[in-house]
Image (cartoon, rainbow over all chains, first blue to last red):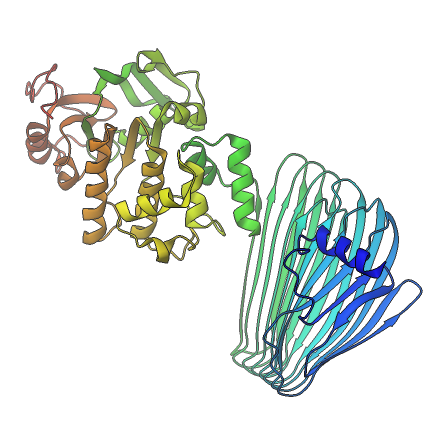
Length: 308
Length: 255
């Protein structure tokens, strides 16, 4: 039975043929850990709860895991709550990349809540790519909250991407504290349709000298969808660099709001921001239409580029 | 035979004629040039022919292969085989060169992407996966614009200031691509005020203040343009009484 569920989850994210069971991974359905595999230097301690799974992930000092670690968070039932609590510890000089696949292929009314505490040690590297597969019509409420602490020289990057299905409700809240010489890059790319609701709050506090952060949010909304982006960088030390980039395309009755906040508390720090909200750029549209694409085809291609 | 005809086309903005009673014929398979000083209406003419949204309210008629295209949108005109290369091409964040080229391509496969990139002198392996964004130089972007036009295999292409903002090597590649288009039987309309570009044309029209001042063989138009329009002695007002015709009203391109 677990094997069958693993297959079903992998199939929903199109990995059923290519997934290497020998690669480091954890596969979870609702509150059950169906499969896991670790490699030297990677510790995964999952604990099943009544409404989800709590897991401690640790990469030991100096370990460099070359293969990405797959985290498959599935919820195959139509309804329910899945809570994922992660405690991630990437020790000094370690390096790891997590590919998180969150799949809710049959969702009618699903809540997926994630709380993560992440520590990235000195000169360690940690990347976390979160990809979502939702059902086409059902409602999925996704609420990931992450608190990240970067030690000196650490590098952290994260990307959130919805690859299939409707958004439903997405409410992202990530905050990163950056010590000297560390860098954080947070990206989110989402296309909202119908009555989807997208709320993103990403922030970085550049506390150490020469720390850096880039927050990139690209959103497209159409129909009745709404998006609200609140991204913030605070620079508190010399030679900090930061950039906030919010781009939103609206169509139909979609509504988008972007509030990029930059605060600089040191004269030798530099933080920039750009925010653009509007319909598709007319010159881009005309260029593609002058090559024979219909208006709808041209808009889709422009949005595909923005969200790629 | 004329692939494109303008019949008494006028276009106004705020009660000012930008194009004024233009009647022109563009012969199939030839390279035509439209020259004139700044503000002559050259780019407006291309935009009107392409049917861009802000340029649809003109009087007169435009015929493509004998049929009026006045009522057609940009994409409908493009599907007939008409296209336009902008003076400053748009940039597309996140869109790969291969996606951009395939969107226009009649044959949608990687070989076609490589073929057109090679035609404009860009190494396919280096450019296929680049984004069509601000990381490209002006010359690279211009060549990729031309590559997308080549992939489309149009019947009539209008190139607005094809040499602006590009280096010498890029200009040579652009000229080669224009020759290639001509060999494939595409009618080319070069919008320019550059003598170097004008020399590539078989036949030219001279515009001033939205009016057709003269037309004829390229060399004659070039002489007139160089002698009387640069600098323009009449501050952008056409000197219709100069009496000089260059090549005659009905001069056919010599090819």
